[in-house]
Image 1 (tube, rainbow, N blue to C red):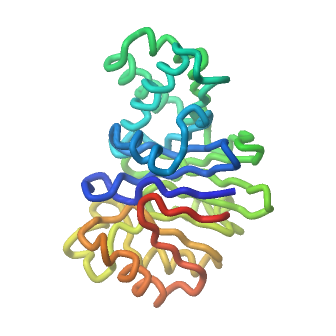
Image 2: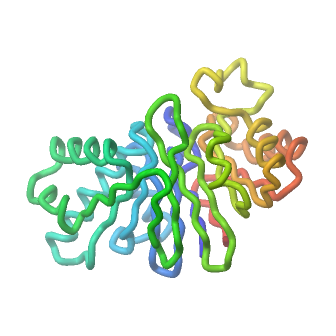
Length: 266
C-alpha cells in the first residue's frame, strides 16, 4: 500500500497545500480530507490519482482547510456520474453534524443536477466513535479525538501487511484515545512549528503542538514511524531539515517531514 501526502500545510498556507493525504492499493484510493479549495484537483492530477478511482473519502472535521475541497470533489464526481464515466458509488465517511454541513454547502453552491446524487450514489456514511468499516480491504476504526474546537475524528487502519496506521487529526494526541493509538506502526501527527518558534507562531493558542512535543509523544508511545504535517510555511524550503533536526533530539524512530506530493510505501 502507498501513502501520498497531498498537502502538508496549516489553514493559512499559500506556498503549499492544506493538509490532506491518500492511501492507495493499486488503482483504488482512500482520500482523507481534501484541503480548502479546487487546488485539490491539480494536486490529484499531479500525483496521478484519477477522481474516478476515488470511492472512499474520510472528512475529519468542518474547518475550511479540510472540507471545502470535498465540495469540489462532489461537484466533479457528480458530473462524471451524469456523464456515465464514474462507476459504482462515492462513500463519504464523517460524523452526522459534518454530513449535514457538507450537504448544505453543496446544495447552496452546486447545481441540483449534481446534488441529486447525494443520498444516492454519493452516499454519506455516518460514523460514531468506535465504529469500523472495511476500506481498500482493510478494517478502519474511527474515533472522536475530543477536540476543544470543533468535533473531529481520527482513524486507525490495519494494513494488509499487518501494520497499524493511525491519524489523530490536526490537534495534539489526547490520552483518552490511547486504546486506538497504542501499537501503531505509523502515526500521523500535526506539528504547527518548531518549539523554538512557539512564541512567534503561538501554536498553543490554536490548540496545536510543536515538533518537540509531537516527537516526545511518539517516543513515549514507542512509535516506529512518525510523520509530521499541518505546519507553518515560513521555512518551507528548509522545513524538512529544521524539523528533522529538532525532532531527532526527542524521537529515535523513523521521522518523516514530507513535502507536498511525497509518497511512502506503508
